[in-house]
Image (cartoon, rainbow, N blue to C red):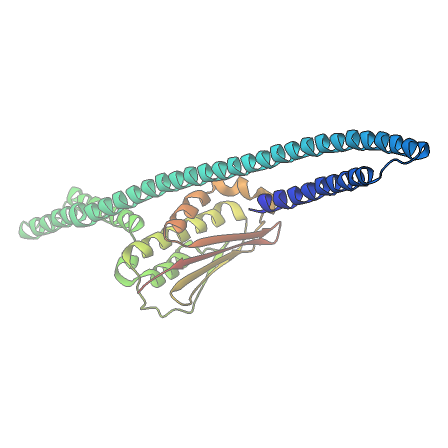
Length: 311
């Protein structure tokens, strides 16, 4: 729109210039026509004026040609800018489409993984663990009824108990029982305790009522996002202290994770995208949230996540 306004103004000035030239020529011609030659001196003056008129006509023609050329150049420049602008818009549109496709692929992959995780956890907990528990009960009943206390039987019981515990731990890692039963707040607090050790301490801060529950999908997504970010802190930050704080404001869940590690330079943010951040961004964007990362070299990293939630 701005291009057409500029173009209109320029055309107005060009037309005004041409009009002034024609006005000048017209008044000069009128002056010649109205004067009547009476003497030889007047005839000479008239001849001089005719010469001046011819020169003025030539000058006017040159100016008109020049103005026409300028006008053509201006039109070409205008069309060039319009073409480049449309080209840039199409490029940005293609880029947005590619990003949407990539986000769709990432989210589809994540959803499939989480569904499989859920199925496997349920299968391990509800089927395999139940079968192992049943075998253990039968062995105990058999040993009591027959008063058998053999070493082999005791080893078999021990192996069954160990297998039962390992499968239970595996199913809890796939889908934490605390998350399913008591909700996100308790599960994240437990995650901080599990990841804390003598080298790195995770501090938990929360201003949300512990009994608050969100939708199952949102809770699972947020839990695994935080777990992945904790894993990055443990592996890459070199920190000895990290903190997660939870708050809620107008149905917006706000999660802030900060560590006092080595951090990284702002221009190297693309280098750390390989730490699962592209997957995290895709998951957050799917739920219309946003994530911001600020980091300073040798001063730590802060990650702020905002996700719309409903109770």
